[in-house]
Length: 96
Image 1 (spheres, rainbow, N blue to C red):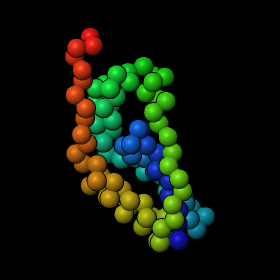
Image 2: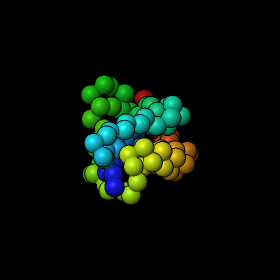
Image 3: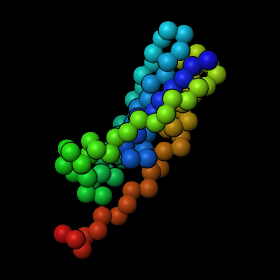
């Protein structure tokens, strides 16, 4: 049994940590997801370091069957698939 916690920017997963059997595995989602986070931030006007950083949050710890490595690989695949096409809001050009 292992447990994991996802680190989100708003609702978009950025990275996660898996713990179990005295080991810790940390994974970062792909550059594609990181680029989508940046595009989302630009579209919503979260461009200052303070605004951008304030949107990060940690999810709760969740238990899952498997070794930390197995859980990390499965979770990475699941999150990459689920967030492969992130809907980026349109930037409101009338407020500029």
